[in-house]
Amino acid sequence: QVQLVESGGGLVQAGGSLRLSCAASGRAFATYIMGWFRQAPGKEREFVAVINWTGGTTHYADSVKGRFTISRDNTKNTLSLQMNSLKPEDTAVYYCAASRRVGVSTSLADFGSWGQGTQVTVSS
Image (cartoon, rainbow, N blue to C red):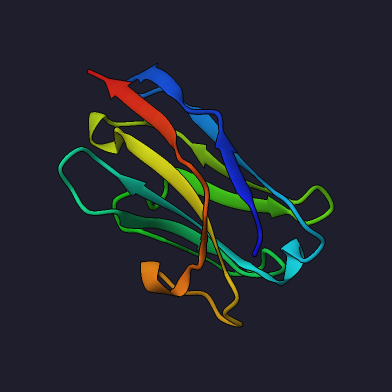
């Protein structure tokens, strides 16, 4: 099972930007579907974005579409999430996750490997 470690979270004012990174161990990173999820206090963990093996297919939650961009670098075993025009509603712990599925999925149940999470706080 791939090991995942997120980084890049922090405090930012509304309208600002942050870039999150996820480092993956192992030699099979390119065979995993990768996704970003987030969990705000008192709420269930929710889907944010997903990307396929090659990076050619992506899907975003409606709440972040047009503001966030997911990408991957298979030569460095890294996953990224560029977050622009941040809103206070984006405040949450952000997790990267890996799936052995062939096709993309937005379901938490389809992701078997999870990072420890990184906190993103957006002030008004």
